[in-house]
Length: 398
Image 1 (cartoon, rainbow, N blue to C red):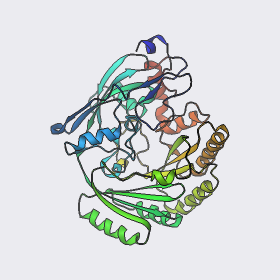
Image 2: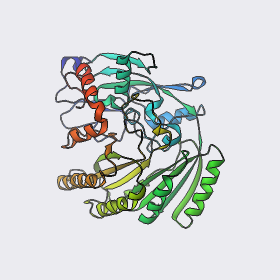
Image 3: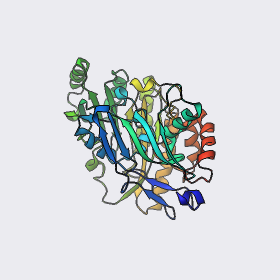
């Protein structure tokens, strides 16, 4: 806090590590604050459907602890993400039926970029407008304003789910995307396109609707390569996605990467053209580790109380993310891979015009564009709050 107050963070911004997936938690000559060693609090209050966690808790640790109490929380596809997953929105395979992770936050504490400590509870309809604005800013834009050291989260009874996995070709993927846009809220489609195309369907077994859908998919996907069905209690111990062993089979080197998350509405009649654009870009990738994946939204994420958080794309259906990857210290392939990502982005932008900024890129040329597309009309108010609570720009820029 003294360093933040005194302006001793130099060069800026301060980099914060809360998990294990961000490319920008450490950089040459920059300060890094690693929350994972000292901010590991996990206090479950099952009778209140609540858990208090520290800013260094990984999502895998969160649901492992909750499982002991028959409780759950909608984490994403990886257990090694930290609270940054929640604070940037929190898209889960269960989001269509359970909502975004950020909507489950009921209290936040931490330190503003100017070094001042704070603790704030989720406002209600009668709360002062300033409190509502601060809460909205901290939910989905916190990494630009503050260091979050603690959260209280609403939990729920652990769900029974079914996971259906398969390897598919481009036409089978096209068919499943079209089908998925008409699915009930209990089901979501995830897919990853690297050396192979993998699909990962998650279904909440809430009622007979799930039984009918599973039977329908079993018939629809009959004969698909590697088709597998797994019944589970919650997201804890879910099969890995994508298959890391196959994804890394062509390289024994350490890879670095940059990830850009796009977001947009239903693809409907554009599906065929979008698959063609993806096919073209994947055929021209500079490195075998470059890939694209996607998660399905919609469902109850389309129902949002106006202006309650900074995740503005409540009407979205698809979140594809493009990963540019290269062998460590290979500057030539790095530049080619980032150029490839930008070209890929331009091809998909007409169909997914928004950005879900789960990873920040203040070091890249397109940072300004991605910030504008992430927050749109809410950005000027965010900048005013940043000028008040982080005037020296200790946190990443807006």
